[in-house]
Image (cartoon, helix red, strand yellow):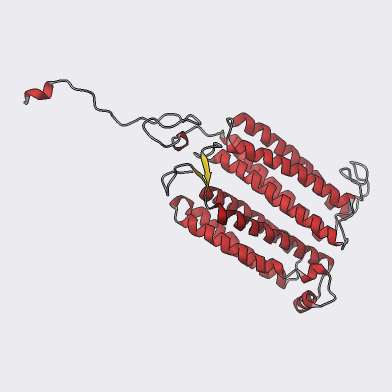
Length: 350
């Protein structure tokens, strides 16, 4: 035996043991922020609740489409928030039942979102991104109620054909998508394993992401106006509907109906770009395939909706597909563009 082998020397450092992450700190011996280390997540209960609120609001949005498509927006008269001036309806019409159900569902949605804000603040630490997203969702929900009230109080419902109704409808739909996006981000950040603290996230590819998401929202706005045109000016055949679009004496809603499929193709190009970026990351391939499937499904629904002259059931199904695509796209965009600082390629699992 070599004599020098028994001489004690300085202990060699062993591998670092993982420990709990401390928000705002760094991992010892590394320049990476602590968000790259395993950290406790909010409870499964609050995460499930957040995704449940997203699902419930999708149902409220779809029923709102039924209100517009059936011309039931005036079912509760010009009173808001009460229906015909009372809570209990005696001998209501079908239109009253449809509109009253939507108002009731919207009231429950407001309570659920307020509960989400409260629970998120209890479950998530300060500067958690879910807190900011939840508050944003609540503000947009209150604005949603304001826009809905204005539609009723100003008579922009049922068979009203004024240009201002289109403006209010566009604002309403834009606010709805932003609200649904904020709720989705709340649930997403509550479910993240890292990169959930404000100050530890960087916004990448914003020059493409922001215009792309705006194009998707514009597609939804054009779709809502096209659906309104289908409701106010029904056609007997597809050929008659196409002729209406280009007739010189047609209303302005029919003249802009062609914009919906055109803008949807532009938005589709952005979605495919996001999907391409998602395929580069093995963790996002499943979600990317889901987005592609929903995009193809939406285009197919659009063709069927056009061929069948936009029946109410198809309008609701088309809107459901659009909402699901928007939710999946929001999560995929957040995963690809809202990255933990210092995260490169597949080096972090969000």
